Image (tube, rainbow, N blue to C red):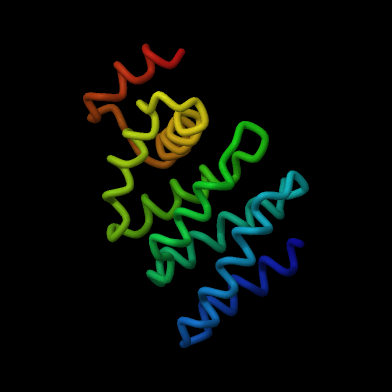
Length: 140
């Protein structure tokens, strides 16, 4: 799987057509659900989404698909969403959506939001976010 992710990353960097990007992105999102993605394969997965975000080929539909993969058992999607939000300023509005999910009454949405927020916090300083402290106290 690592080799497939490496090839996908290179195709995204080299392919000029959006159709190729969408197809490859959807396949990588599907692969990210696997619990077998770990170690160097996980690093390659994160590298794919960083490269795709830098090239601005991740759209809202892809982020939604990625968010749907986030569970307590498969958390890779949360880190991928955080990488996209942190890398591509076009998706910075996702920060407020992640906060809203974290405050949801639905447990699955709360889990998605908190996991994404935690992963975002590993990439950047969230201490300036005033809602974070209340969120942490309410969820833990």
